[in-house]
Length: 457
Image (cartoon, rainbow, N blue to C red):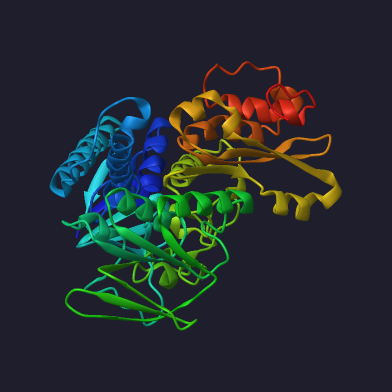
């Protein structure tokens, strides 16, 4: 049995884990990352990156179909799923190679194998003990299912959906959150009939309600079916078909059922509870500084309750390394972390919804404005409908920005700065937004809330 010692030992090499290690070495610490699969984790290999590659292929198919609308005689004779797979796999492989080089350039020791926490400062990997002055837990998440709903045969999760070597003719999707609506968007663009089953009253139920309603209108226009406010009851399947029974007595038949009901923390059997770390339903509990109740042990990323986003993982990884270094980094609350859903149309948001702002500040202390993309030249050129909604406190800062429309994910950077810097609309209104760009929509929203609208009514 060999011992290796480091200043910081990171268990898990996904977005959160490798970010912690990189920042640690920048600050002069020695760092090791223990990873049983591949560096980059779910995001790079089974999540963010490959799904967005699919969505880009889907966008190209849609643009080609609509070419005549723009004076271009184009058409789609079919979708070559093998070609789509090659594009996706080559993209991931290139990013994976780059990530390996990045960690090597930062002098990070990467240890391949399944690690288990055996003491507050020790991770066991096979016969080796990896000892750290500080240990950072970053073991990520897995695709959840529902009690009694087995993932087998034609009942699949997003991981199996990525690997399908066919385009289904009919797909049922259980869950209308981020994963569900993104795969719905891809499959519809590829020519499938899609039905989403969501137990809550709206698609993407965590978003501003007006944004959810606009997405629903857009999906209806695209021919994506969805059933809201109805719960799953059971599923049966044979060699070619799945049949989903709903509690209202209706059924949905499809080639596959994609289970997209969220992700759970990968923490079971890793020694966390045995070492005394406080847990809740599999999640690791931390204080606001991401420290667990066991001294010297931190937790970051999807295993910490809250948003399960790769960029939240990056931020928390950087935060923990700086916290260990005594730099007292700034806390960014989950509500002020930008979110993007890459369906068509896209959704992007940061900060409080209008309802939550009113609950926090009072109904008479909150005002909002929703700018329709129909008034934006660039959005009209792109052929997208949607809106940008800004929420502010009366005589106070902007506390939320919520958007729906093609490419609005690219606008969330400025929205994040406005919300996190607690800017007033009057602070932003004087700034110039290039014309014609979609970025003008944020400028127009700020002008309106500042009381001097230009193209807003």
